[in-house]
Image 1 (cartoon, each protein chain N blue to C red):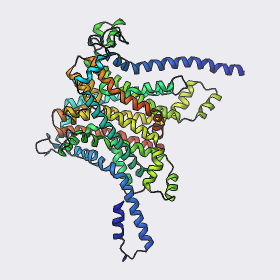
Image 2: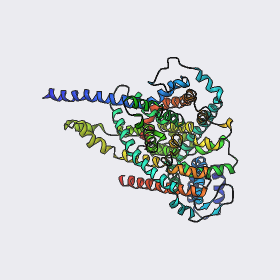
Image 3: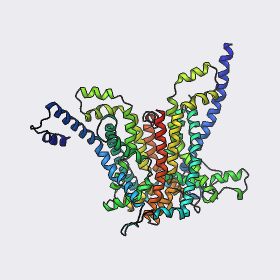
Image 4: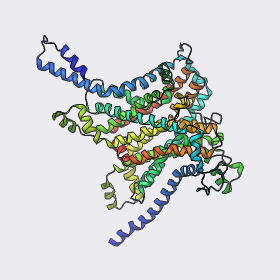
Length: 283
Length: 316
């Protein structure tokens, strides 16, 4: 009796394991294939890009593509512009969101729910709904063709406040009460207690903000028409329109654009599942 | 903060008949309030000026005629009636619905399935999770170019492979260039791009299920299939609900991939609501009508959000 009980799950276990591996590997290949194709095409001459069957590892890798992209368009400047925008937006977003979220989660004040509702109501609001009035307003302010316009646009989002507030709600109020009795100011509680405890939420918000700002193309497309202000996503689009047949170069520029996001994601991903679990983003 | 200190003593002048303890209590309340507002102000001012303001402006514009340069004229409901005569709006509306109907359930099933597989103790689990999430963080501009190349009807590797599998060249799908296949191409792309994100949300949900439930089921001799239907799925109820609402909202807002892959074409086969808003605003400069379409979209999305909040409240 005991033997059969022990054996049955083991036999199923092995069969299931194999099926699991097969499916997981197939899905991973589907996920990865476009990126491998991108990397492979970035090292090819134009005429070899569509050769079939696909030569995944080019026999004569053309490293020149990675040299040429920097001189054909001002890619270095675009990378600098994007990095500058992304870092400023991410820092502002983290600071102001966690600051506001602390008040919404732990302090009592008049109109708290009404103000929070104003944030919530806009989360479901597609940006495209108000991007036109926003653009006209920025033009009035004289911010058209400035990086400041994009910073103002992206640094104060409802999503950031919502995410941080959900996380702070899960931190017990007693912790703040104890600190208050010890004479700590609210600013001290935010800095010394809340911030250190909210690493998972801060990492999650960093990934989202960094990725969204770095990858944003519609914002820069509308606001930045002067070449010296443009970002890397617009740069790739420039490659596509100017050198529409230069697939190798387009792919090389795309690889360059992916690297920073990959680094940030890999550095912070260990907090990521925890961050999503604890911020109520899972419902 | 400083304002609180400067203003408070004046309002509680010594002549007040209110007992002193009550005054200091009110004073303290006022101070607490100002501290709270100082926390919110940096974000809220930016949010109010750059998001809330433009939203209200957009709503007002829906009842106006404006081309962005000439004076604004009041239009009443003219923009609203125009919706019913606009054939592009009709196709945009239906295309958005079709896109949503396919993307929501398919993404849901794929991400749940993958999350369950990657929640098991398998070798290289974190590696596979990272790979599945990668399309979500990758630049849409770059990935869309690759997608267009892979699915190029004439010499893309996908059609090459199909051709080598014996499919007649005239039967090969035209993907983004073909009226009947363009929406399919967009839907496939969207699922590929976002399923990793929802997989992470499901992973978080799966980790919240108590292991004791499975142990009890093991003792009762339940098989994996029974465990999935009787424990996993019901326990994931709130997560599934959240994911489907997020997916629905996101699907109604779809724009970027269409802009980059099909530009709404061929014809109006992939024209969606947000694309119509964009065209009416930045191509036709009919800002009033564009805002009216935006208002329709907002009402649709808001309805879904309200339903979500109601149901969440009932659950709690």
